[in-house]
Image (cartoon, rainbow, N blue to C red; front, side):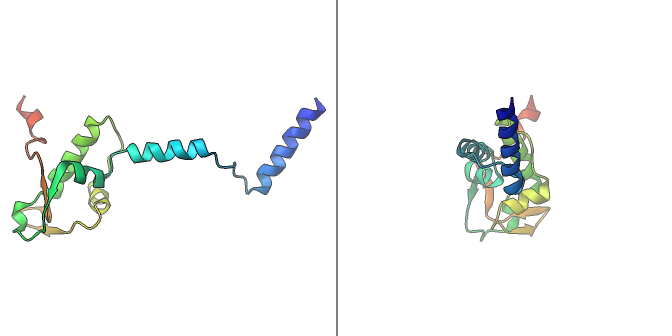
Length: 124
């Protein structure tokens, strides 16, 4: 019994001395990295679901932020994922995509590969 108490006290001292942090576990770190890399990010959605061009066309030809966000939510749902970013954070997470006002705010140079994908379910 004394050995167990000694072992617990030594463990507690190590814990306090390490800044009250548990040591890192390689398996946990790898599983966490894999989990987050499997989550669909806005950049991943952009790469998989959109065409990009040089952005030289009139803004009206490009995808609205509203429709992009709706398609992103649909895409996440199809993947069985929850936790969709708010529209403003979604645009921020797209990175270097510029926006322009033209009958709504548009993602310059971005078009959906399948523009009907957000509306097909409404037809049933």
